[in-house]
Image (cartoon, rainbow, N blue to C red; front, side):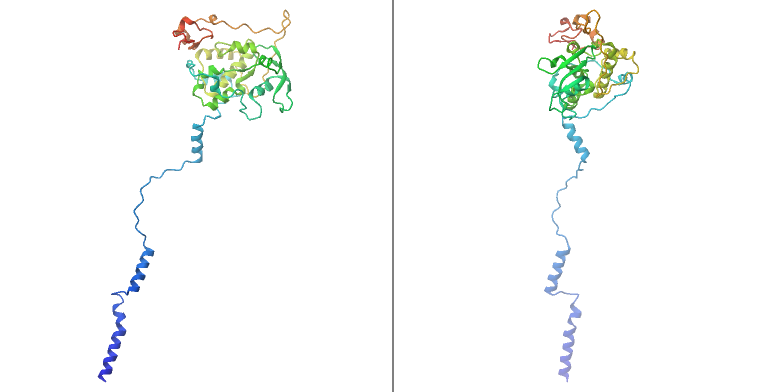
Length: 341
């Protein structure tokens, strides 16, 4: 009996074993399961990556702006004043002396007669089409290439028949109202290459004229040259004002005074529309000669006289270039063709 009771007691102790040791120890299987659980739930402690300062991604607009600032391609100029009173616009222009002509070259103004408006026709033919009447066109060019026509030159009022050809096309050149050299000395050096090409091909700055006047004018501004056709002078200086305002170019004091004197006789003159036909009154034939009156002979440099460079600078025309009114070799100390540098 005692032996039976001892056996029963031992069985009770063995059965209760897990109740006493569950929180004290774990079997190898339990430890492995617990370790696996820790590996799955706790992150591995890798070395921290090096700190990299975050940079803000540029916006599309900023990216395009940076591209344009580095791209010399055509950029649209601002300052369009078409339709505004020329006498008011001229007062907004900066007044400074001429900058040196250093570095000037026709190639600085891009391709000659480029198709900047992308209409499939070069600028020269665009201007001939705008300014001539009674035109005929080369077949197959979609009315682009002007073969014949009639021009009343705005600079003289004389009537000229135009015929395209190697020996005849030059009779009607296309004049830059603000000459490229003049523009270079009054701000164009600082324009982008694209804007200079737009400037050289801007219809507001271009007129079909007679060859003689074109040669006489050269690089002159309003202070040194005006059309002999007086009724056109208001339109002429208004174009110069509009062009200089559009491209941020300045004027000399003498040039500004000359423009204001002209506009005093036509206070309602507005900046012309660039694509509008240029209305010019033809000069009637002289009864004595039976033909349009010719333009006056070009002024010789000695017709304008400056005693010294101080006088030239005061007139706002310095520096003076060989061949320009007022230039004298005595004022050109280094004999490089540029006086009063």
